[in-house]
Image (spheres, rainbow, N blue to C red):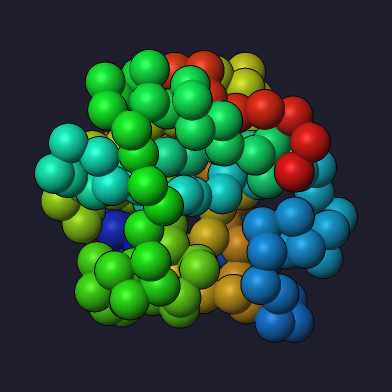
Length: 152
């Protein structure tokens, strides 16, 4: 799935920024001179027989106990092999925060909901998309939860 085509097709205003290869969300945020608080990173877990996409600020880390309480089962992080299978059109580790486009439920950490704009990966380690949080939330319809702990 091409995220940029999807956003354009949904009449979403966005800006694409290109940069040198970066692997972590925090590195990408720094490369673009963006706050890690608005850079949405994705983490995929498996629980209750399904994969779930978690979206949280790059400046936070996932609190697995909070995710367990949210999902009602102990989650495990998806392996690289599972990620490659779930997101075949994306660079490994650059999964976009559109779980619904890949058949996954999505949860967003409450820390990210407070921002007017967010930055996301579009399936690549070399580009970042800036868009309004409300536009992303309208398209994705994530459940909101508290599972991010500040301090990536």
